[in-house]
Length: 275
Image 1 (spheres, rainbow, N blue to C red):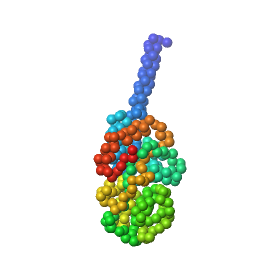
Image 2 (image 1 turned 60 degrees about the vertical axis):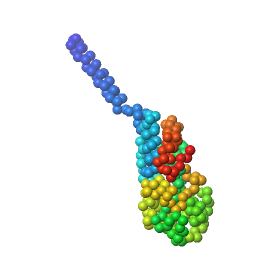
Image 3 (image 1 turned 135 degrees about the horizontal axis):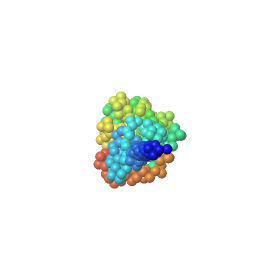
Image 4 (image 1 turned 30 degrees about the horizontal axis):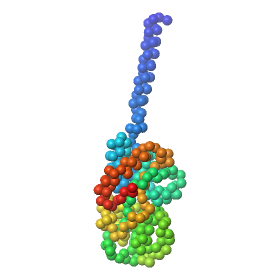
């Protein structure tokens, strides 16, 4: 073999190695470190989203990136979380999660920590505070088991109806044992009730849907749920993510004095911290 031929073979081999090295370098550049990727946290539009936006700002100071993903209903955030599209969610109370897991036993979701309390209230464009709700009134309540039950328990506590078990968070219409005012109940999607307030006599509305509709439970409600209720909101993730150290980091930020002050100042007492 001539020296010229040998030199050409060596040059080709060196070029090939160089190309492989360049290719490997490009591959490394495309693969972003996991720590640089924001974790997705699902929320419902309104107060949950506003609180999580503040948590996001506080977490970024500690190097934790969060992407807040908004939903317009209660069902989708749990479905998305179970399917791995979210890292966690913050949009529901404990009885709602319990009812969801009972209905969807394949969902592997767990409560991480308690967040805030959103009092449910009764609103009306036909009845003023202090006035008697007329017999035969149409009453809008949420159509999901836990929030519907919550509304019925609130009406029971106000002496308007009687239910079988005051401690049952998923009380249903079939559990009403006394309806002396002959109320006509209309089960509607929780998010749509504020838009239907003119179509009913009274409406039981979750505060996270009331506030965006310019309804303040402290000023506009004719009945407000008591603080001694089991409907504390919770931060939820999957069983797989439960021991992820970022959960503890988020908990520390969420339950910080800075975030507590934001909740108190921003919502002016209509939403309470649960810690």
